[in-house]
Length: 182
Image (cartoon, rainbow, N blue to C red; front, side, top):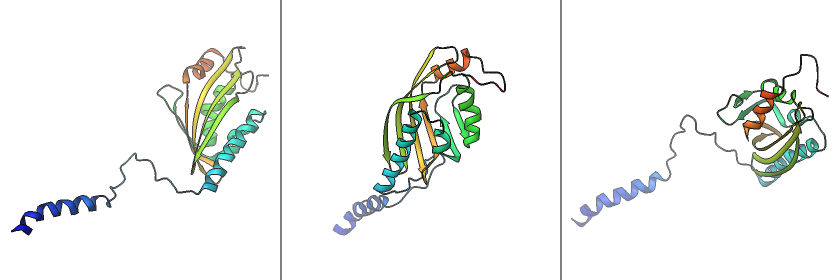
């Protein structure tokens, strides 16, 4: 009789204990599992991004070609017309970078930055400054989250204040085809 009364409690304990070992199936929209990387890989990823930012700040102009895989998926977070997902380096350059940079008198340069890394993810928080084609300053704060593979970003999520970015696009006319701003 005593064993019979303990049985429901014992079954409940076994079910609860075994539930900890059962992995639920992946749901649509779940992020992909994170690939385990060692401390050396984390350091290499961080250094690759930090060094590319240093070269950019010093006047380099190849940041995107240097850091992005040709098949990168770049997402600008938000709900405005400029937010969205760009598939591939050329799509990103054509639809996001060039419409903006063609309206600038000077290139955007990172003036301060912080870089963190954890495994294959590198996060950078930076301030960018430029002069728009109409002579007004452009300043914006960015957070970019890179997922790295073999020294290149394969996925990027960009957070920025889209109001100043879109203000430049709205108020500064795009240059005529074949012309460049000084």
